[in-house]
Length: 268
Length: 268
Picture 1 (cartoon, rainbow over the protein chains, first blue to last red):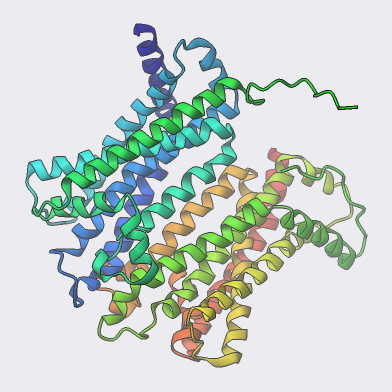
Picture 2 (cartoon, rainbow over the protein chains, first blue to last red; picture 1 turned 180 degrees about the vertical axis):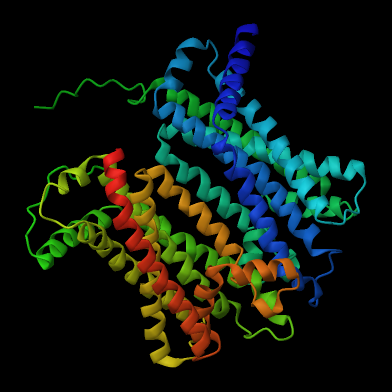
């Protein structure tokens, strides 16, 4: 147990050290949500004056989407980092040193969590400095941040599962694009009741939608579907934990999947 | 993706050189379905989501159309064209990293031809992609206010945009000589797209700071040129600005690429 903790802390320290030496890769998951915040709140704020839009402020409405994006993109980029480490053979060397291989993922998860907390702090600071009104109290805000951090854990585990299966930097596309698509299939720009057709159906089925709506409820001091949101996020974390564990089993079996490479005898 | 290591037989005439390099560019570009298909599907996904999510914006007084899909299709064409940068630039960066360009300099081929003929592949892919985007739009209710002639001009502008972004990709590859730098363009272009008048006409943007950003952002004029044919008909000013910026950009980027290529090859 102590040795596994040592592995987790060692991987986390290595990952943090890499970022300290070369902070470049840390910028995109922080800058993309900030750009998106400027773009959505800047371009679409007039939507708040249209019929049917009842939320108290459009910037606050867009902020929840951007906050989740910041948390999830850190998970995405951590997944890409894991893919890079396994593609270059560092992952295999880490696996030789670790008695419990999931401790390695624990290290990446720890770094991702701390980075996500930092990203959330930056996004919050930018939003508050630019005058975003917040109606929710400290407990509401804590709830919103907890939902965002749970999404960070779920996304990191999803990315880790993909990275362990593919062990190639090219797998980054399969981490980034589905997360990006799932994010946009939520009520990202307008409330769900204003969406029509297939998008309304897609957002209703999307497990991220309860967190989006509950987060906006927290911001407005009008809690909404809180239990459902936390349950959905916990479900995502559990689902992707299983996805990562099975991915690690595949990685442990190696490129051949543990199957015998002996050619079968042909029947005569 | 494997790079071709054999140096093709290069004619001493410029036409022959263009033919040889262009044929190679087309073959290499079409051999990348893993890059082409996501680049085509992602703008279509954004078109599908934004056309539904943005419908509320059409209720804003003064919004130029009742169909948000018609409004946003112009931006989709620009977004699709941006992928030419990573396609063309990526192939040139591979040629530089793999030493192919250095070997080509030993042949009679001129540097200008080596650069410009690299665009042949993305022009074909970009043209087909633009036709697909337009047909998908028409199937989902987009109307072209400028008529059939306008649709043809729209495709011609889309091709010019492919040329523009392909040239920017080539310049980046020639200047940096690395694939990673070329891939970084994707994030930059997404940010510039969202910070333009892509989601809302500039005259309806509520926040002055965002209106200023969108006004100074050249992407706004590229989007407005394509959009004008769909939404307002023949708008000489929008077309002149968009075509002028795109043409100027192509000339600058190609001229710059030819100049910096020699320096990069000496460095690498």
